[in-house]
Length: 151
Image (tube, rainbow, N blue to C red):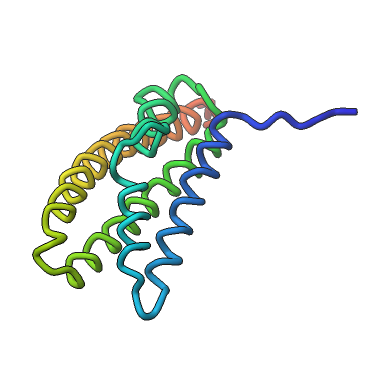
């Protein structure tokens, strides 16, 4: 029997989407559970022992991913979209946390903001490069398939 073997990029997509769902669940919780929110923020933006979102970005969204067809382009695009949604959710969570904390949590807030800025810059850069590759690839495909007119 054929067993479908998942590609590592599919696991990466699942990881990012799962983490995004955790953040969304905390954002949807009324009243906000501050400790739980902070745990999810920390697990999302602070690099820990496990390979986190930054590592996912470095491995699967490195420059050349689309132009060299390292992974299925549709999966690379899905991961890019998932990463963008993830970063946006992290931003919302960090803003929410900031609006709820007192000075005893300021150090935590400053730490996660610093890591978030790094994450956001890295993701934005990687995805920017890949969107250009995607555009160039689309142009070259169009160029290859244009019918030639004979005069």
